[in-house]
Length: 328
Image (tube, rainbow, N blue to C red):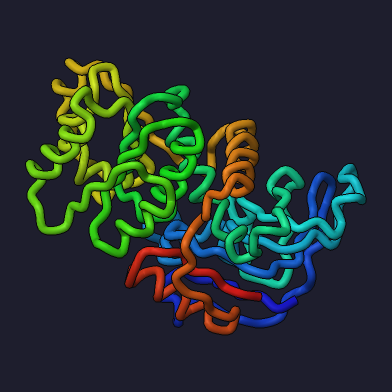
């Protein structure tokens, strides 16, 4: 099969190779997917860069955990009826060496989720890590029906999924964005109200958020814990909760006593290690939201497999919101 891989970490154009490898074969409980589209997440780029200093987990890595395509072969104990099924997948390169940047990938059967014929493979390839992280971030503190949920960074991949899933679950959804374009994207994604943070001070952000939710936010989904925790504390309701999945500072300071006096619950989320049932529930509810008209994630750019290094550089540059996919 044709595949992209790296055997050393570093800049994309220096370490990523595109070439031929043997076709993978599914083992017991696994399915093989002929990949049509491979989604790139920031975590895929960081693994290749060795941002977290963990080194190479395997001698050779095919990047990307998320993808979509058609099951063409199944391993022992998997029903043969799954052959020919349109699916999106997650976790292909989570504690595994070979992800979706290839003509074929092999994943546990439960990681291959049915994909409606109404949803494109490219859209399916974007759902995995962002969608499952967003679902966990929205629901980890309990039901959100009738509650006010703030999504910080609503135009990001996780943020946009969180907006759609929170609204789907009956929450009143407020989101922050940085630009007029992002405001439009998030409004289409389901936010009831939006606060643009570009060009205004942190105090003004707090004032605008408080005007939209005078009783405080019941729950916050947070993309930039280091930068926003002080703002979050000021707008959270008594007994509120916050779920965060990213921070620009690995050792952020927090307003400890104000959080204590409000009895705030903090949740720190790493998607690779969510419980299996939480991932399955998230996948089912993502499909349900799509079936009910949620538009999913905006795709900003597409690259062929031969241009995967340029695709990684595009993600690194963060030129605009929206997902990047590699087409196989």
